[in-house]
Length: 334
Ligand code: IPM
Ligand code: MN
Image 1 (cartoon, rainbow, N blue to C red):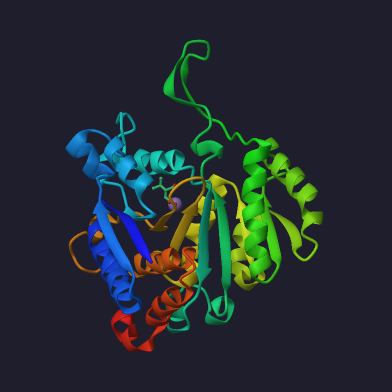
Image 2: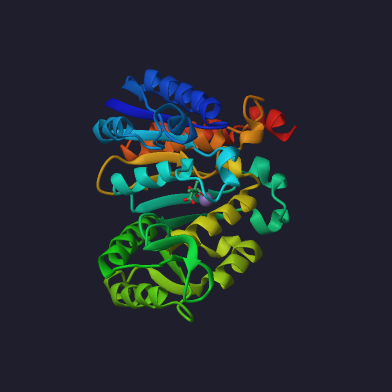
């Protein structure tokens, strides 16, 4: 197969983990006779410094024309504590998601037996945990109407606003994706919401209840997000596929990484109307930059997800096998 990959290494540890991801991608391509070409493009703080835009038009063009995007991480401390910065690296990631129509973010939470001891949770709790969080990625508070902090004359003080907006088609399409995943797995879908408080969650629940009968082979249950956050730690093996809105999915998947033992282990795939993107769920960890201590496995597993997306299952399985291999665990454990 011919694959044209856009490579967006970004900031912090991004370039060094990307180097490993690309090395694995190329080694597997060579073994199976695939022709992979790479095009690097700017994004994040890096792109702000160079061209004043965290997701420049030229990068968008490269992504749009590619078969897939391999993304590492963006973010830089110089923007983190400056609430009045006009432009921030994370906006580049959000612009990419929006412009490529990437509404479905697939985040598998899988434990590795050889690394179970790295989890802060007890072995017997995390062993065998294996679920997928399907995070809606282009709606909710991330993209709803906003008002930056500003003076409200009527109140005589500052205020700010984010809107947690969802439309029915946005909810339907992500639930459809979730049901497809559930069908291929253990046929158990948990819809995570806050329907006891939020109107947007009541729309999610309403739509899910309407759709559930179309998937009689799948058991659908509903869980409030606060309860889900607890259950994930108490009994992660309860979950098979969970689906949730953008902000809840962001928070729950960081929590999910603790089950596996490290943020550096969780890959993701984002799909939608245009080019799919494969990226670790973690950030740019600027403190780790250049020290050769960043764990590249999330990036490497993102490559496995990329191959699997193109139905190259053996290629994906080989990468997973290498990641699971006991041979290099002594290094990882140190
Ligand atoms: C993630 C990240 C991003 C998000 C940030 C960097 C904007 O935390 O991919 O989970 O919040 O979506
Ligand atoms: Mn996050």
